[in-house]
Image 1 (spheres, rainbow, N blue to C red):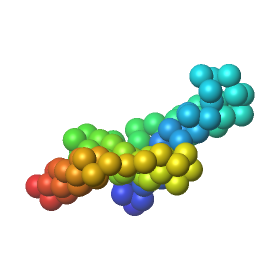
Image 2: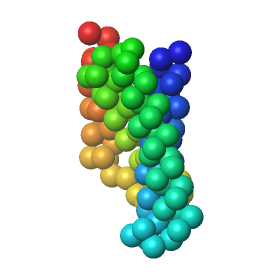
Image 3: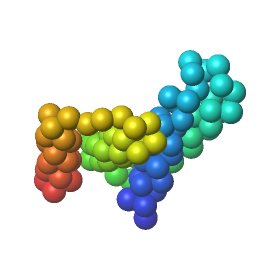
Image 4: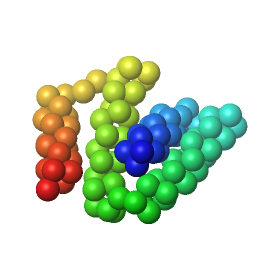
Length: 103
């Protein structure tokens, strides 16, 4: 259940970050509201996850999965490109997260 809640938090973090680009510096009202609500839900759920899981494990998982999903969202929705070096960096992030979760 804790990891399911962590995935919910990650989902709202990815949504909020993806919408952040559409806020146009917080001048687009609906995107701004969507971003703020998404971040609020994300942090609210994350705070409850932290009652049950260690901070280092939770944040490493939240940050790395969020980073990977935001990168994918940037490619899919904003047609951003990704370099070989960026892919290597993502592999290293995944490796680090696995090590933290295993040990």
